[in-house]
Length: 255
Image (cartoon, rainbow, N blue to C red; front, side, top):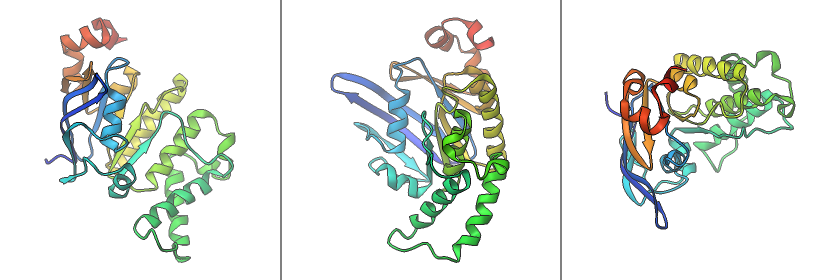
């Protein structure tokens, strides 16, 4: 199976500090790929290079076979990139369903940026909103103001808004950061269900190992900007170098 997203020998430096060193990875259609590593390993920089917030000093990024290495982030969204952030970004003074409507209208304008969203799209938006509410568990909270939602629910709404754009690949930047244990478990179940229903490829960074092993089809490990391992969760769990440089001891994988 050909890669949906492929990065080859990415290098990135900030002045004299070499943050990424010849990093290569590939994401298959429908695959959940998690990037892990200690603080300062280069995860955030890799994420920014892949999504177009930063350009690499060297290397190439291909998406669906096309070179997007120097393509700005907003154009990558147009091509099918969807991204959530560590801090949930929603319209706090709008209801849940109106947040989704804004996202759907933005997606409709994407194909015709100089045109107006036709009134005949309203019915289609209503259908899409209903589907998104059901898929993300918001049916009973559709009229709630986003600003009144708990943190975990705001993150869930942000995910629903990204899904409204119908991405081909979903980038998740520490999707459970700041959540309680119960919220993390709910988030894992939601992402598993989203993947099952929509067949989305996902690339995420994550620190919580329970979340990592609950979601990953493949795990890549960064250390000092270098990719030191990439493989199935079982292979990464058994990798002695990963245990040494990232987790420190074998027990951390079995906690």
